[in-house]
Image (cartoon, rainbow, N blue to C red):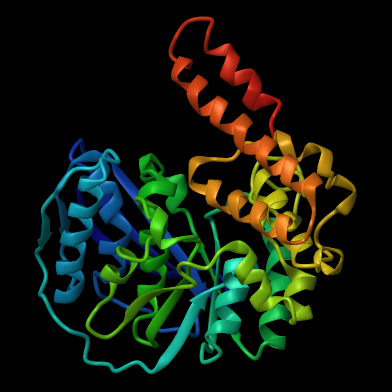
Length: 387
């Protein structure tokens, strides 16, 4: 696959759109675009596009040709990332990166700091953990579909007020990347961090460090994850470091860190299902696994009732045993058991253990999913779950 050309146009008075035209080996051309505030002079290098296109090239097994200047540190890092993905057997290939432009280090020496910010728990943790951050980047087009204009407007207006109160400048970025053939990539296992790094590197003229709030719970349970403390920094260039923040902290520990900040509790937004279950919008549905997991941690920390964006009428202890826990989140619930035992909450301990047992049964039954008729068993159990 080859980046053929890029094009920069005005969308409206305050926004510009940078488009890359990408040709695959079968001759089809995709248009990848980013919209951003027009007062920024974004990068004209190939660095953002190498980060963005690397997961796609590895997924479809096509060498990646980029005719724009590339940073040598990023090229080296990308090769290491390809080997990391391949070693974890996530359906990618080791492809060649073919820079037909120059290999060069940017002359500018950026000084600013930025982080991605969605008003989620990881994002708030990073905001308070790294007070030197001056800019926050809000993305439209990842969890919140670009088709949800009205929902994003409400989301953006709310988060703009948060950033202002925190003394930060909010940078909205809109992208169609998940509407292109790129959606073939495995978002959770491979491409999440790459897409964030790509957006960060659009602003490499401004920032010497860009933080990605980490969702990694334990260094003992590291697996191949889309945003990873080993691979995200490999998207760094000689002038701009891509860094994860919050690695190894549990959800409960992050809540303990932010619970004295009422601004965070008032605006904590974690849900990716939204009001109608079709994707993120401006509310917490308060009944998916992620919402429940967060509400449990908030309750154990004694601050659930202070969090205004959760509907407590949908939170029921008697339903906790129906939560479907993915293998990557088991440790969260084991930690909840430890805290509940310390707080002498046998009712919660019982429900947490029930959820873990039920989920492990589903994991085993999922082996039946490709067998006629028998696939209905795990399907029915998951259908009746909170997930």
